[in-house]
Figure 1: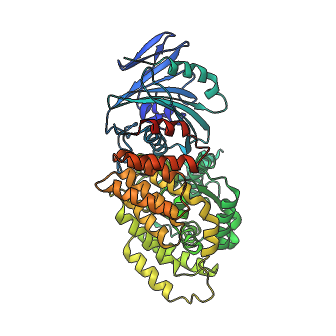
Figure 2: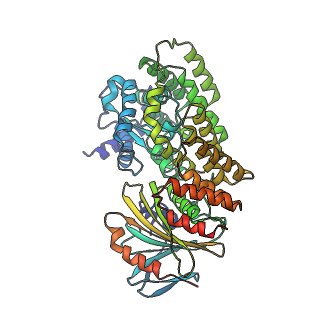
Amino acid sequence: MRHGTARGLAWLALVAILGGCASYTLVKPKRHEIAGTYSVETRIAWNKASSGPIELWTVDGPRLESIQFWKGLKDGKPLFEPKRGANKKPPPPAFAAAMTANDVMELVVDSLSRAGAAKINASNLRPFDFGSEPGFRFDLAGVNKDGLEINGLASGAIIDKKLYLVLYSGARANYLPKYRKEAEHIMGSIEVL
Amino acid sequence: MSRVASIGQALAACLLTAACATTPPAEKIAPGQTPASNSLEAGLWMRVERSEQRLATSGRLVRDPALNEYVRGIVCRLAADYCADIRVYVVRAAGFNASMAPNGYMSVWTGLLLRAENEAQVAFVLGHELEHYLKRHSLNQWRDLRAKTDALVFFQIATAVAGVAPLGYVAQIAVLGSYFSFSREQERAADGGGLKRMVAAGYDPRAAPSIWNRLIEEKDASDDYERPLIFFSTHPASEEREKTLAARAAEIDSAGKTLGESEFQAVTASYRNDWLRDEIRQRDFGRLEVVLDHLAANGTDPALVFYYRGELYRLRGAEDDADKAIEAYTAAIDTGGAPPEAHRALGLVYWAEDRPAAARAALERYLASRPGAEDRTMIEYYLERIP
């Protein structure tokens, strides 16, 4: 994907993923491994791009909806690496292995906010197993840089001092509800390897 | 002929003559004045109109009618006959910034409103911005640049500024409106003009040097030493300017002039929690400490200041910060006005510090004080695991 197309993605943070020349491959409806860390099952086809610790799936384009998988983020690493040439001071908020679920939710919100999302708010943090491991879920709401209302659902866990996180987000009016059931099915199908 | 073609011809004509290099500074803009369609100024306006359109639909735009009306009221009081020519956009963004585009749109960041102590300080900053617009400083800068370079180089410069990749998206919106870093002379002129304008509008001139001094203090404390404040990227600042301004303000009789402190506090107090949350998300802890020190000194709700000091120390995580966070959260709670989240934050710090009894007590107080807590099941889950 070209940089110009990537501008205005559902969450600006996605520019960090697709700001370069990411290429998509087809994800067929079946069980898939996420970089050898956990597996998920999808009932519909998605398009996949990958960058650094993140794998992104989308049907209609990341500007409208996407599901992102973090592939086991290590202690001290940020959710989104700053783009080349971007201001790195102060450093972006980073994951710490000792974080609570509240801390991770705050990390996600602050990272998205710093990446450009506006008026972002997280809510409804609750315990929810990530596969067979104890984890958490929470909801997100905000506005992207173009003024489009975006909602999201996150599912995560800290396993062996690494952060496993799945984030589904999309335009509130249409695209979030359009694939939300499929995203929830994927989150419910997680099997940690 | 299309407007773009007209502007292109005007640019070409100007490049082929020496006229641009010798053109005197443009006169002050008149109320209601718009540039001729085939002029250089029209080209400048066209470029900033695009950034204005982006800002007008931005997710960061504050749409609260009361706050917009208040800020616009200050601008109109300062602008007088020019009020109808100016569009004001209040932007939800951390950091001190305000800017004015050559076509008459002004953006005012909530970070500026968080830092100001009174209406007069805001009036000085906005009056300063108005002076850049009224004296057509951007147009003069454009002419100067073009006289020294050729069009290609100029547009590379303009694009580099407009792109401002290192500054990030919010900063990009701000800088797009101004394009140029103003010259030292233009800054002095805007300071002087802004000072006169605020006094004419009935504001106490002593507020002018105090907000500049406040900004310099924050710049020096910032963790972001490579690019301290976005405002300085287009407004070169110096201690010398602050001293000059202080001397000029002292010569003006401030009798009967207002700081507008109570009005300002009444309008902005309810937004401070959100604006402080925006600031802390930037994780520039040195800068935030200065902001909190000033809020404490100007009578902001102590519960809010102590709570955000606790948040600062908790997130910074330097040596002794856990103890400082516990102290700050406790102080916030002791005021009797802390948000229930102070109990939760205190409990989680105690838990991280392996003080289970204190952690349990604080988290239970959180649930008791926030019966509808959205994270109740998560906190109960923690409580089951705290020994």
